[in-house]
Image (cartoon, rainbow, N blue to C red):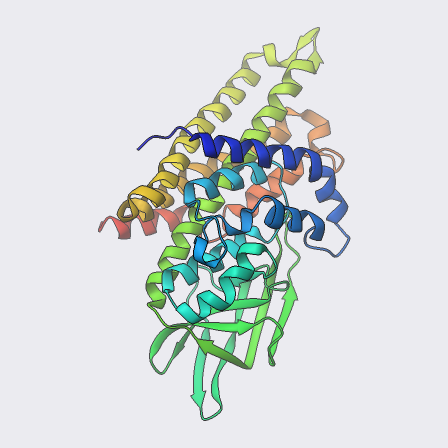
Length: 362
């Protein structure tokens, strides 16, 4: 196993980095704030159709690139650095769930649309939350009831994959985004780059998918940890770059503030945290493709190594920018809010430590 990017991954990284700089700078995120739109539809179309990011982990049989989890982490790293708002994470987790289940009918119907970006899917679940939906069967078919929150891109999804307890135990059910009895209420999230919703099901028709639901959800949790760690690691690098540059040009007492020991130490701590986090991220990404048996533990380690250091780096970014760092006009608060929400999404660091201990049999 090597932690160095392959030539194809370097090419993907450069393409996504150029796209973010040219088509989705942070001004794009600011334009979305208060607009009522969770993401820019044109940006999403270009990310999915032109760059092919929506199909990175979808197999070629269903129109994807089958590039693997390592390539996915490379793309999400760059999108995280630019705080690009999109439903990519939600749809990727839906694709991961379908791929793990192995339901041929559902995969054939849904994966091509996910790969092209024409369909947006989501998994209506949080790993640290008890399954909140129940399934009932009758002559007319299967229906679901329950309240699910928070659901990533729950208000925009064309379909939801909902874990529910039914007569046959835990199952994963497909629900149309416009199904009868389904209501989605967008949540006011602290993170402007993330769209969350509360989804309520009341006699909502659903289709139970074949396959091991528990195993599929465990795989989704691992992919979610890797994906979120990749976004956070990229965002952390952006914080370091922003703060280092400011420390070179901000002058106090006749010299750049970067010359002062207190500032140097803060920046050194941020850089050290990123180096360790990036190593853990690359190890988890490679493990997902090459040693699946070790992936769960590696993905949990990556989240633990990234989430808290990113939060601290985002807070230090505000502090080291002084008075301007606390203003709405500066970008520092966007990263801080992103770090705050990402710290608890899909289970916080303590949840990941518990998951890691369970994985290792401790």
